[in-house]
Image (cartoon, rainbow over all chains, first blue to last red; front, side, top):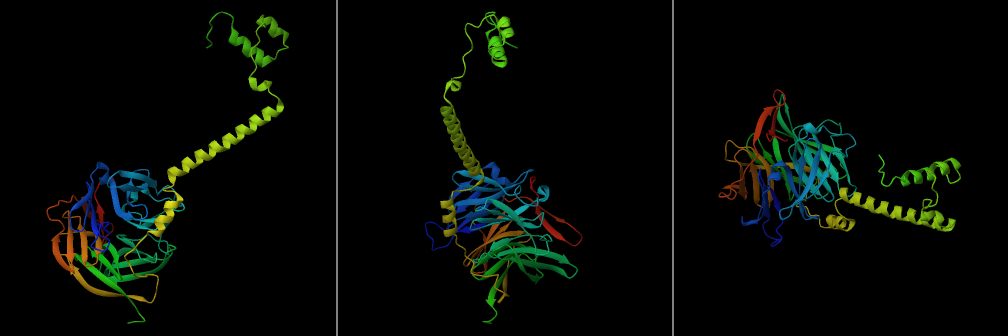
Length: 221
Length: 184
């Protein structure tokens, strides 16, 4: 589920787009259906975001040969597919790849690969793709959520199960896709992430709740 | 196999004539008929300058054709033209005001919002001001919260068809959630 700025009322509540197994439905702020794509190929889609520059939705699709980033419109269907996995310097294990979340930022598209524990990046400007890894090059464990702040910093939600219990590790990468820090939050296993305003929202799967964290400037506190 | 039409073996004669040259007397005897020697390609009759021009023109045409083919091939991989790329960057908008690259910032935990549905598997989350939407892949539902209050299923009359899922342990003590769709 994603929220989109309404073209008819940009200042009001946003539209809501829901992708399920059979269709992708665009609701307006009042819940009325604005558009719907109901095709058999929708069941292969994983992850959803909207690219405001291209005015198209973006998702991923995987087959035995690789992973493709798919651009589509709810009116015209699939517009274009770009293979993201065959241009990587160090190929990923396609059979293990499980793309769950996708985020567009400028000319880059970030795709979480839960199976291989990494973030795949499709750079539309250079036509290249690459991987984002932790600074110690270890895979990102239980990668379940990604978002990008207004400065281009990438936030990825991962989690670890240790003897002390579960902990959420928010892996932060700068705009150059370099890992800069890890923020650990004990007792949380995230299954989704969203940035809004100066807050970070996490869907928590163990306790069935939404955890909210607000960023404050230490110098102000 | 050579098609023989009239017994004159004209094709054989022309090929032999071209490969052996015109002064081969054996060929003349063998062929017996040189009254109608094969026509030379018209290009060979042109002056050396015109041949050079012809070659140069062909070279330029080839370059143009290659450029066109390369552009078409690039278009298959490129998404959009450069003007749209500029537009894409210019029209980018983000609702986040955070700067996670700034080390002066700290996380402050706010009161959590409980999802009063059990069992459930919350997954994707979207926020629009006071409105929060959470997808539940277990119950094929999207839950709606307003101002941190649970308001039930979003569009209760609308049926969402969630992907099937499964839970399994990757390693002892480690919980992972994967979708169970056949192609993942």
